[in-house]
Image 1 (cartoon, helix red, strand yellow):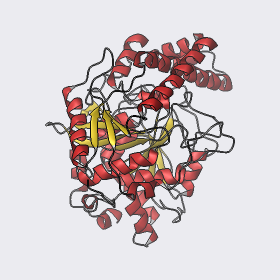
Image 2: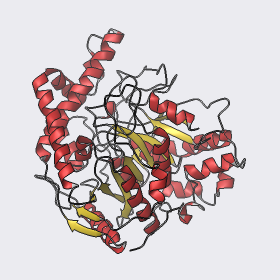
Image 3: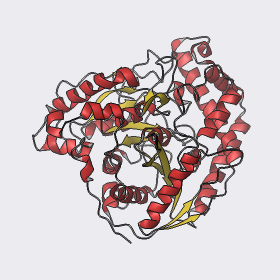
Image 4: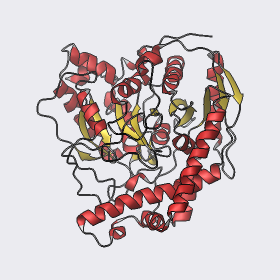
Length: 492
């Protein structure tokens, strides 16, 4: 097979620099952090009237640091889950609209120390409870490839800004597929690390019973790996942590990859349907992996998807009910549900009614799913499937407006029925952008691995990036914005 040592794909250089390249230019004195920050804000101004991807701005730092592996690199943050001192974080909700963070959380502090410049908060659905970013508070985030379609959710704004090349990477999080789904719809790389690979404290011990993991959406694989190198590791007092690593994720990415056995799933779980284009994307990736020397076999993991669907609804409802009631008590709000979107108010009311026994039963479904996926990864090194069951749908299709909870939740789950298993099991998974339709719409391929095998996924992603580069694939608005630019021109 081909053993490929991975460096920055050459197709990146003439189009748009990745974050690693931007930071190198800062270290060499070729460009200042202030210039990179200003240019990102200028690009945002050019396209966000169409995208609606950024909902709150963070003021530019008066004296940005030029120190750290990502010194001077502008970074958008998701509008939920990552606290940055002095920044507004509304969670896409009228109830949380005035919330201002009083301190950096652990993850934000690590990213700040690495040199990132935080520039704003990206559009996300209310309380991150959807696969489309269309909160009533802020309006819909649109897909750069087709403005009539969703950018996905819940990290939709982050994916849209990366796809439009406003920035080379953006912070995200993933509780049921919320990094991978928007990355799939926007044609960029999205990585969900192993459970608790990145910290969520110090205020919280875990998020959504450990299912939600923060990380990033990016153009290049190496940016994503290097960002995990600066962010990962248990926080003080964490109740548990991801397995330790023996080398950096960047080093793992650059290590030659041996022949793997990869399980392919193109048969949807019970009662679901895959668009032909989504199946075609996974089969294309399978053929590419075979060409690279790997063995690909059709092998579906055996876990109870229907039970997992029920468990996610229970855990999501209880978790959000706790957050809503906590802020209501702090603000003295007697009826917080009146400030929520109706379908989410129904979900949260259901969460309040859930017994402790029912909640524990849902958590035990997660544990059984972990066992099932552990057994599956005794048979294969990695897993391949479509990321979503549908290409990016039209704005409104995945939003909850006018729908009851049962109908909304069925549609939500059916859109990406194979992503949440990696949240439930804690296993790492990623979206790799390898396939576009004849209408030039991206379709994602999901690749996952055993718990703790994050480095292996970066190896696979880097090999695929080298074999079938995607950084040169630009949506029309990005082509127009970047037309004729070089890095030096963009920095001025």
